[in-house]
Amino acid sequence: MKKNTFASFLGLGLLLASAPSFAQGETQAASRGTAVADAPGGSQPVYYNTRGGDSYDSAVLPPLSQDLKLNHHQKKGQYDYFEVDLKAGQTLKASLSVGEKGIEFRPDNSTLETGYPYAGLVVYDAGGHQVGLLDFSGSEKNLQKTLEVDASTPQRIYLLLGSGVGAMNKDYLGFRVDVQSNFDADGAGEAGATLETALEIDPAHKVYRVNFLTRNDEADFFKLATKPGQVLALEIAPKNPATTLNVALYDELRVEIVRGRAANPGAAVKIDAKANTSTTFLKVTRELSDEPTEYELRFVAPPPETAPAETRPSPLTPETLSSATGGIDVKKDIEDMKAKMKEREAEADKKHPKNKDEKPKPSKKTAWWKSPKMMTYGGAAAGGVLLLLLGGLILLRKKKAKKSSES
Image 1 (cartoon, rainbow, N blue to C red):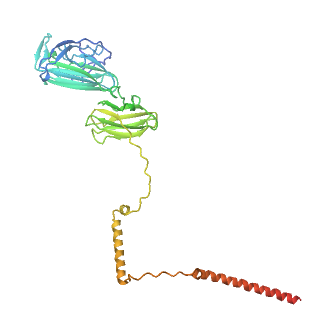
Image 2: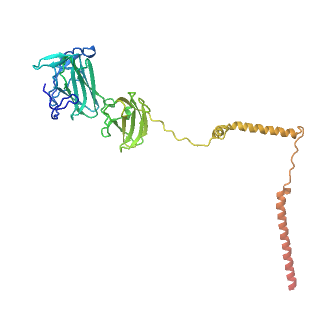
Image 3: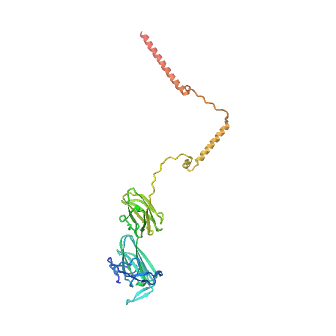
């Protein structure tokens, strides 16, 4: 293999020169091989012999979801280059394992097996940033290590298989590359981390059982076609008991409508609200310190709208009085008062006994003209009539006296 002069192998002491130019390489075929000797765990999986490219420009796609081994021993500081294109929402899983023995290259390029197995796998993104590292430094034997790289956006990942510390023995080395799709909305696609990259879902679908918040997911945004005034009720439940979810709804003007948070890790979040616009956005996040999770998104029946109860004064009863007076037993107080009144009536009967045989005398009725009111008003009226009569007599006498004097 050609010695790499393009990238730096951080943590392994390998110093290399200028930055590489990244380009897609041609995939090389892998041939079926035999089992790796002394495979970790005592198992004997069938490995596929393969080799990578000599540089980023010639990097190849490794056979995915297969147990692999190199078809050649790898010298110290040399690497096989592989590449994998990830879609948004996919996760690359890589594993590297060593057995009992390593290898050493002599000056004449002959080899000698040793008891120090070395191995290394470094993962870079398309920008040349290291995003993962697996390393065996010779003292670890019969061991496997794994790493994961999540893609929240489409990107190309490079895998460099080799060690900057020691040579690798192909017969005691194994590796594997898997790509897991963490698509949301039951595999419809990746719910982006912004409103612009929101994944469209349909409330009429009712249930989306498979959704993911991976390590690199800042948020999952979903887009819903709604009508102003439409009631939305949702329940989102994580499958990881260590994850606390947060949920919010936004209108198309990015104004928050409602927000909800799980009461405790592993609990479901329930929210309901009325849509304001023809498009509504749903945002699902997890607490920053919480673990990734798969979750279920469910549209549920909205809670029934209840009209406000008519306010009427409650009837005045001993029970309502008791509640209004802070628990005082008003009913008992009324009964006590009645009992005291009966006792007083009984004492009065003892002091003034009544003859049971005596019949009550009928009350006398007073004539209407003898009533005090009639006597008062009638007297006043009679006095007025008398005054009128006297005034009339005086006038008549004056007229007669006047006539007699004129004659």
